[in-house]
Image: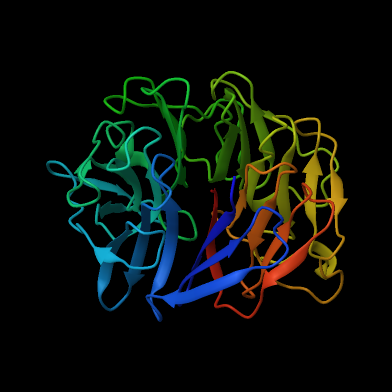
Length: 369
């Protein structure tokens, strides 16, 4: 391990932060694509210098950018995201039919085995795959066949925002959609099924509803892909059987509403969340920015505050804006809508802002080099 690279997407460009393994001093590169929204950036586990970025603009549309030198230079690749066949309709906010239309790429997930293979989660919700380094994209339409006409957008749109590739089973993929729920494929994306049993949402009268739950984020430890953790629109949840059944583990959190959730690199039962006051007040309870850590896989939580502002702080942390490195001790990182990126080199015990005054942060990913 020679260093750490933090990939930061913001509302007005991309930034790349680099440090050695001590993670004490950080160099900042950027903004790349200044003025553009960068919804997500992520590097390939196979070739760390291969990085994909989702560049978006309400004026100019969607551009997928690719770097082969660790983010020093970039080239636009393929940007045609065409739904297979007649996409039909899904439900709109008021329950009326609405035509399926592509808007943007929310999440990019490079393959665990091939630097030229990458998945894209898009709005309106669908999953696409490229096998030529992002030059061309093909939908995996079996997902939308899974009750797609009944899906309905959440407050931020109908976005497929989470893609988890099972490192122990190349045919298994987990995804999450706001506000349709979580889904799993066991055959490489040909067919999918909802995995939302045990979830409860006050706006859904049917306690056994298969779809319609607003899942904000799911995560797992690579050594235990059957154990999933979820931050839902209210409730932190856990599944010990690959999503077949969920149970609540919000425990003593000051609020069980939030967006990100992540797992310690070396401790599969240690998880992190950032509680937000409510679904209408997207800022920390009491104006205190606190990361909460559970060392028991949920249920029992401790506030991590050392180095974080504990008064008059009203930022938010978005769903893709938290990540961990694989150093020892494990580093934890998150970015805020106030433009700070905080890092903890000791698993959350102490924090410092490694960069300030960026545009609002949309995503944070970490590469351990």
